[in-house]
Image (cartoon, protein in one colour):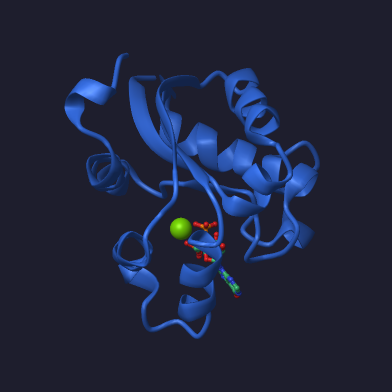
Amino acid sequence: MAVTRTFSIIKPDATRRNLTGGVTRMLEEAGLCVIASKRIQMSRQQAEGFYAVHKERPFFGDLVAFMTSGPVVVQVLEGEDAVKRNRDIMGATNPADAAEGTIRKTYAESIEANSAHGSDSEENAKIEIDFFFKPEEIVG
Ligand code: IDP
Ligand code: MG
């Protein structure tokens, strides 16, 4: 299996509850290394751009409001099969459906305030990493 990269966000519901370390520890214990990390306040423009794929969904406005409601931690993660590994440890979008031991089962408050984002494909991981990081900010 190849070592690859993915993009992660620790969402505002998690930073608000001081869970940056808790979420990061679960990522690390799943075999992922944090090779870039920064805490930012996402602008409305950034959130709308990042989630543009969902702009026709009924929850889009609420999602943008939520993602800009407090600080987030954006990260680049590296490890074997990183996209799938991250999706597996994150768990299902709705915490009610997430498996035991996953980040969302452990920490999420709701289907919207679900503590973590993870890229859904290698292609999107590259796009999302470039959206938030300059190459020199990533130290693998
Ligand atoms: P994912 O984060 O598991 O990949 P997506 O379908 O890509 O799930 O949705 C992006 C984000 O939009 C979710 O993580 C969640 O915060 C929010 N979201 C998804 N579905 C709903 C919904 O039905 N109601 C409210 N928010 C939702
Ligand atoms: Mg998604």
